[in-house]
Image 1 (cartoon, rainbow, N blue to C red):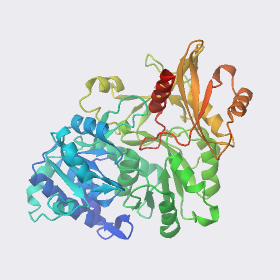
Image 2: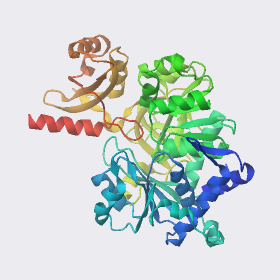
Image 3: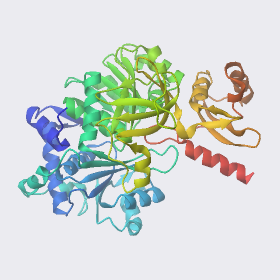
Image 4: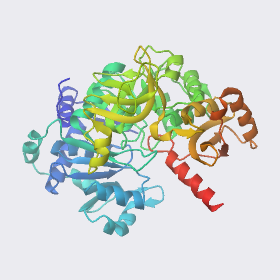
Length: 521
C-alpha cells in the first residue's frame, strides 16, 4: 500500500466525494467536504494558539462531530491527539494528562450531572502543563465554537502540512489496563492507515456501506475500525455519542446500516431484552464482534438475530493500531465461535514459547505480530517498549494456538494465567463453560493465593435473572465438564463487572477488590 498522511486522505475524499455524507449525528449530516473545511478552521486556530508539530492536544468527548473536527485538525498540523475517556476522574486524569504532556485540552462542558467547567476550575492546578481548555457546548471565550470562527488564511498551515510524514505520531491511546498500569501507545499516520486499509480490503467495504459508530473514539475500535475504515472506503457512519441499546436499535430500524460492530456486551444489551420482531436487521450484511473471548451465549444470541449477516471476529490491540486478525467472511458460525480468525493484509503472526522460538501448530504460546500496523512504542516508557516491541515484532501477551490453516485460537492473557497445583489454568476456558450454562450471563475468573494449591480460581458471576445462590449447582456443572484441578474454588455473584472502554472485564480491579476484602476479614 502507498501511504500518505491521514489529513491527505481526507482532502482526497473531500475532493472526490464532496457532497457525500461522512458522519451523521442525529439529524446533523457532515459531508467529506464539510469535515475537511471544519477541520481546516480548527487547525488554523490551534496553530495560532502555538500548538506545534509533535505537541499534544487532549480530548475528553463522546462520539461526536467535534471530536472528529479536532482529530483531523491535529492531523493537519502534526499535533498528537491524546484520547481520554469521559469517565476518567482525579487520579486517572492527573496521571494521564501530566504523563502525556498535554498542552491544550478540548472537553465536553458537561455529562449528565457532572460539570467539567466547574471541575477543571479546581483541578487545573494539578495539570500545570495545560495552557488552554476549550469546552464543547459552552458559550463564551473558551467555547469550542470560537475555534471554528478563525478568519485567517489557510496558507498559514500549508507549510506545516508539507512537513508531515507517514511516520509522524498521530494519536496517543492509553491501553485498556485490564491488568497492570495503562501505557500511552503512540500510533502513527502509517500504522492507523495500515490497519484500516487491511480491514477495508478483508471485508470488501465500499462507499455503499454504512456503519453504526458504537465503539468509543478513544479506543482503536472507534477511531480505526469505524472512522478510518469509513474514511478509506468513503462510506458513512451513524454516530452513537454514548452507547445505549435503544439508540442503536432506532438507527438499525430507520437508517438501515450495512455494518454493525461492537463488543460482546453491546450485542448482549441490544438483543437480549428486545423481541426479534422489533428489530429489522435485514440491511446488515456484516456483524463484527470485537474482543478476544466471546461467550457461547452471545454467539447464539447474535446468530439468532442476525441470521442473514456474515458474523465475524475482530482481534486487535492499541499496539496494532486496530484490527490485525479477522475471521473470513466465509467462515461459518461454528468456526467463528472457536477461532478469532487469521492475520489480515500483509501482517504476519507467530506463536512462540518463552524463549521466543516458534512452537508447532496446535501448541499454545504467545502471539506475536509484525507489520505496518505496529505502533511506535509507548510514550516516555522505554522499559515497556523494549519489553513488548522486539526486532520488529510486537509481543502481545496473549496466549493462543494456531492450526495448519493459520487460524488463531485464543486461550488467555499471559498475565491472567494462574498455576494451581502445578497446572497452568486459562480462565477463558472455564468462563466459556460457565456462560454456556443457562443461568449465567457473564463470568470472569482470577487466580488468587491458596495455601494448599499455590493459586486457586475465583469466578465472578452475573446471572441471567434473579436466582438464589447457585454455587452448588455450578460446582456440580464444573465437576461434570472439567478436570478436577480446573474446578473453581469459589463463585462470587455480582450484578455487574468492571469494564474497560473497550468492553473487556478489568480483572485487575476484581483481584484487587478480592484481596482487599480477604485482608479485612
